[in-house]
Length: 121
Image (cartoon, rainbow, N blue to C red; front, top):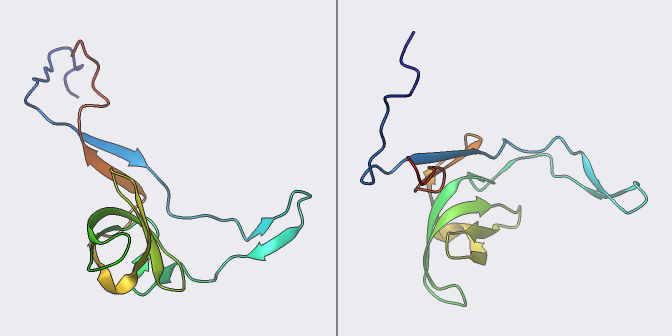
């Protein structure tokens, strides 16, 4: 079928693609209180304003606390006020009007880096 991997070498100039499974959503029908009784409901739709939680977006925010360029994973709300998780932190309350989709969510997160390679490789 193929090689066993014993003869595969990774040099320091190679940058691997790290893939992490994040899932497509939740089957949870409602949130519960500490006793297990339903306390909040889940929305019937997953997409809001063309965005879905988990999409990679680029937001250019002109003014406010989070003014600037943000690129990362989006957490959507029906109100249109989104949270963007970047490698530097989180930008909360970014309007959907400032966001552009880079990659639609497919259940995985992709990053480039050396985090998964052992030091002896």
